[in-house]
Length: 383
Image (tube, rainbow, N blue to C red; front, top):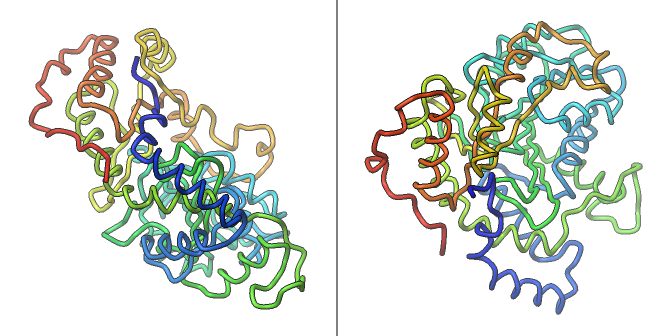
């Protein structure tokens, strides 16, 4: 059996330290706020190259809070790639704004300046650039277009922890960025968690205030806006501080497995392209097959875990069908072909090769018989 994701193996190296952290939190009662939240916010801002990071309850709240913090709401339109997880679009609707769905590029399946420009309109005030699959969007292109039209730029970096474009970290490329620390992410908590990063002190202050019942950080027992309760738990922050120390090692292993997939997968199942200027972190290993459903069945019958991200573009989902969109033929076509193969830091080279063998068996290719030894041994993630 080759699982799609093995969180038990991923957390095994941290198990003893997690128990120590739990005991520490129980002793100090730092359940909400506290030293570990402050430490993680500092460390995450530093990792993303930003002045501020604000921990929140989850990645979806992070999107919603940023939109509110930037004053985006009723009467505004926000351009969103239709090839994304539903939370991106849902956050726009939740603040009273309207998503405008744009298409993606056929090679990367990411939005671009070209696809964003096709979605412009008089009521558009912002763009959410989604760094999907662990691959960063061409942000200089998006920023240039946004600056010409006076649009705010928000990065949805839920799948792109420590990714970069031309060596500039994701999270620092827009006006603000949002992250999810759902357990299956590259940097995952042991429950829900999220964060907002920004270099804008006003956005950071507004997010912190909105996420804490509308209370200013420096004036206790005062509520200046109708906020909400969306705070990062102290225990989750402690776990994230521990795991952040090994995140670059884990991402490096993901890159090694991606390279092995690139060498061994048959041409009949091409991978999604990664731009040469991008430092991807390969949250997902996405390939395309014109016979996707049968390939999925074949892999599962072979004991290989498979995912589909995502089987329907957002504009096809019931709550979003009536919103404005551009021609979405690329996303529509990709949605019936894409599937995600296993990729996680603790995979062995033999497991990755076995997945390629199974894919090649399905398409009748001999590609997999190439030797993988030139790729190098995958590092063990550890201290």
